[in-house]
Amino acid sequence: MEQNFFKQVYKVTRCIPYGRVTTYGAIAKYLGAAKSARMVGWALNGNSENENVPAHRVVNRKGLLTGKHHFQGTNLMQQLLESEGIIVKDNQIQNLENYLWDPSKEL
Figure (cartoon, rainbow, N blue to C red):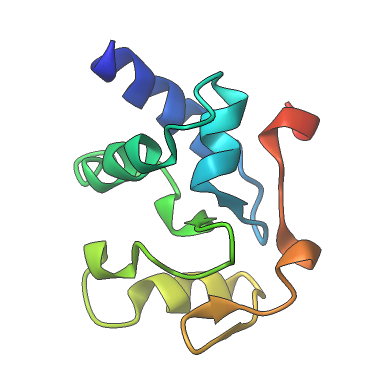
């Protein structure tokens, strides 16, 4: 089950458009496991061997870059988001609603 869930998380994460973000909880809800936001985080954390999953586009429900310590370097997650035009200040996406992509509505 866990491996299958992780693969589903990667599939949804690959759908997040450039310049947009979603939350761990939104992915969990879309996959029918609304209380499994942490499991989504674990899936993305364990994804280091799979380069084509844009895990930097997944943040917590408040727009905080809670997964940033899993990226190489000190600010790689923020740099990747900013390179896509997303405004980040103090480890938090500014005006999150402008960038938010909800898989339950988009897929």
